[in-house]
Length: 294
Image (cartoon, rainbow, N blue to C red):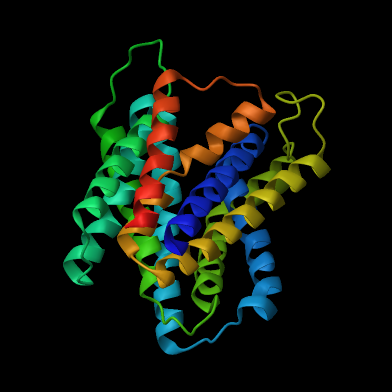
């Protein structure tokens, strides 16, 4: 039951991080947002050490480093795929793949077994992942091969990142998560160096104020910081979920991360939840109950 609850919480918090980051990317480039959120997330994780502890064993550092590399690949591939679109197809495809990868690793490599109810819950959860990620696309556009490949790459990378965290020693606290976030922050900062140099030379505007006339730099920094805190919290929750039970269960529920984005979009922006997404949310809650009971 604890795994199911933590897994569902992970999805909501991950989705909230994506929503806040998306709000920030309306005013500044994606790589800058991801780099900034990684730094603030790292700071938040360090502040959590007294609560969760951190033992930097060789294994913890190795798995955390691997997770960091996969997370950077996931971010770049995900945003690149969504930029090509259509989001209505690309987003649920990436989420579905990100659920399947931990399931394969859990069953094939870690010997996880499930009852009939458990397998039914996982199947329902995978269907819910697709339905929740669906966004109406009035253009009728079809995805290009490049977008599909990038979405698959993003899903695989997300799945490998969370699976790496799950493989870390259970007594290492949040050391693997801190290592992952530190690795990602360092790489993303390096990727931003050319842009920072261009800003200095050309004296370009740091924030796209034309896109958001009422926005301030303080507000932008707050959004980036909040995205980092949400992401850090989600990583901790997933690590706790995977250590408390099945990687497959934690992975499938975590892949419901569009749920958090949808809920915040509804509360903050007043966006409507489509009928299919409503069905998906219902199935997700049902799957969570079955997994908790199983």
